Amino acid sequence: MSPEEIFNPIVHSPPHYKANGLEAITVIEAFAGGNYLRGNALKYLLRAGRKIDAIQDLQKAIWYIEREIMNQRQIEFAINERANRAPPVCPDVDGDIWCKEVPLERES
Image 1 (cartoon, rainbow, N blue to C red):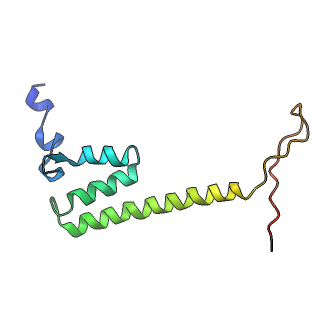
Image 2: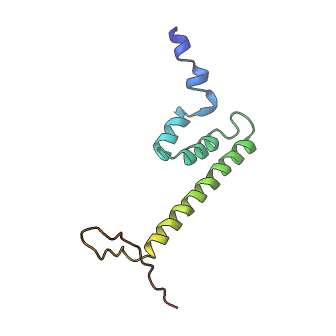
């Protein structure tokens, strides 16, 4: 394979992902890290109107943002559920009896 075939600017550095000397991938990696949903939302926001039409890119960004919001709500719910339980009760120190979580009594 020739060097030209290995580095194809249309594949590795497309113009619709560059602005003011910055590439979208650099910004995405810096801000979203490994978060796929946030990264894709950023990708579509950064390229909005530079490839297809801006509305389509913005709608795609919204789709990823809404999915990330659902994920964050699920995480918050799980954390709150755990916080509303008492620590596990383990009456038997040598491990013969499994630990059980006991719900806290809620104030009325």
